Image 1 (tube, rainbow, N blue to C red):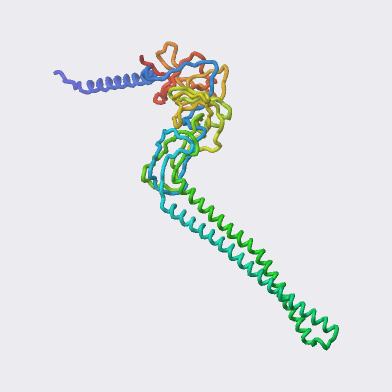
Image 2 (tube, rainbow, N blue to C red; image 1 turned 180 degrees about the vertical axis):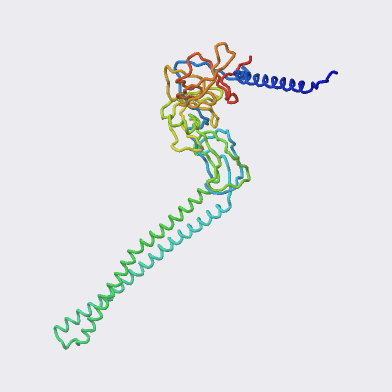
Length: 421
């Protein structure tokens, strides 16, 4: 009799063995794949900025935006507040010295001038009245002095006569009459002295009073002149010949302006200068006398640094660049320009175009294109002095090497990239 054997355990054992074999193979394959070098990512070759390393003379420059301004410019401001009644000349008009460009009005100024003129007239009338009064008083005092002098002389003669008679014969004149005549003479003598002193005081103070009144008239005359000048300033004229330049905020007829407000500005035709704003981190190398190239977008003008602002404003330092008298037609006041200041010339150095991420005297990594032009390998280089468009390479590159200057930060995890044509 045959015995039936159970084959299920054997099949189950084979299945476990094959499963282990498959899992082990997958693990081996995974480890093998991970051990392989990572593939280089692809980069569009047309989108990267390339440059060739060169050796020779590198010109260090610093750049900044700026504006062309006239060397001579005159602001015209309101002397007093008033309303603009008429604008006769608009910006861009060529004007001569003394030309009328604007009319203004202010009733208060007219009233103050009339009041000052009235005060001056009253002071002048007061001077005439004072002079007449002083002369009259002086004449009256002179008459009083003359009267008292006559009385004194009469009393003196009476006393001398009585004294002589008394000396000849005491019985001719009584002692009391002699004493009375003497006292009368002495009284009149004292009165005469007092009146003469009073006359001297009048003569001495009369001129002082007249001078004081004259000084008052002079002050009032200055006040009248001041108000006349204020009234005259309402007729706005230009102090120098030139061309009217526009204001930041144009004025309109009927507008009320305050004292000291800018009404216009006159640009004196002639030489221009450039005011260039250099970043404060680059301005320390600039000195007076250096050559500067001013780019007007259509022309390049060579100038010279003449002044460096000692203060830093908004992170920049303003420098003045003098320009030659013969300027191209593109140069005009308030024109926005770019200025490049030449700092120095570095001879026989290795340099390349300035990358977007490179700073002077720093060590950075950069991609260098292989000789076949299909790949770019990461290399570490040492940078030196920098300029506007170039930077010195002190180590890591050789003349003739082609490098990528554009931003490659998205490939920081790779040492090689493939350039797709």
